Image (cartoon, rainbow, N blue to C red; front, side, top):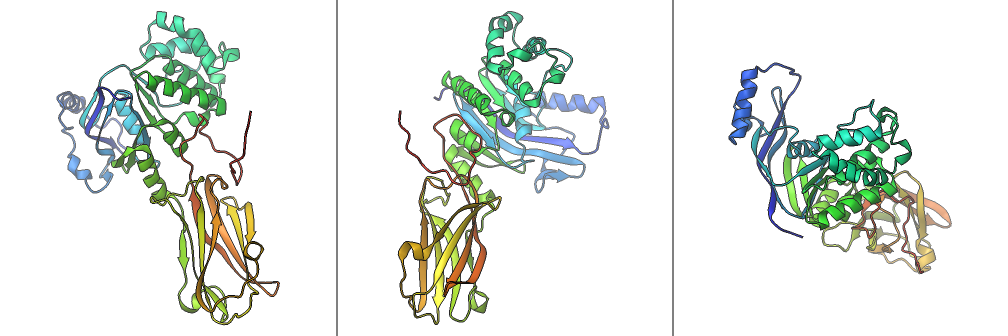
Length: 418
């Protein structure tokens, strides 16, 4: 759904002072506030000083030149590594702090859930904190009275609702905080990655609630390190890197580019001359793993090809075996496959040739995998190539609302019926 423009962020910068507490005078703060109200840059600092890095003297620029816009009903996923500026952006949008330079225009009632327990008093009970947190978020007492039972039911902590918050776990605080924020019925909902604390049932509730908010024409900004959550919920994505916008656009496009850049992969290895694995009879010249997708992303639903290029200088019989061991990032064996058991015994041609092992789609789970190769001759181990290639598999948008990780090394597509 798309409608009127509800959020406009133009050339926003945010600077923090490092190791300086209370050093500025009140007059300086008032000048900075007045400049901000008139849409002018902070007079205390030259923004250009941070043009070539986030740090400039005692100043750290958390955001630099961020620009984007959202329409009514958009769901924006904000992604990036730690320190990219994601949480700073949400704080500016939540009006917790002011930008050093730039303009932020928001049209509509805003509800934010940025940190676990924000707005809660540890000595008050869960029930008392519902009223306190609701008031902080702008709810009237009559509105809280009307929605109190729904909030308690949604949080799932009704048995502890009269217990002081200081005895709550992090997960219980998140449940209660999100329940209050979700029932505020905001035009704009801002959510940091607090859902990671919750369990599967709570994640389903939260994502279902956010989808319901979006279906009603409201706008959501969602920060997450879970690409599954971003792809499953968001219609747009914004990739922040070192305080700047690296990329923005459709969710699949941005997430694919982000994953490909930050994946710790070794997709191809090659060996020239006598450094190649093997001996004077046969040497391996290269090993690669690839997918047929144009973006190069390895989805769990797509086949993956492992290509092994060998140079045969002296083997004229069929007595060569290649054993492929697929291991997870924790070094557990996912599966083992053997060339001779699949294609049978064939005479090896002299010169260069290629052996291809195709791993079917719908077999591997999402995660990191390492391929170890073992060459066998005359029923004995000949030579090995440990960690010949390393790659990461990703999954696309899910059908359900669970965003956590599925356990297991494999994730085959199995038949269900009812």
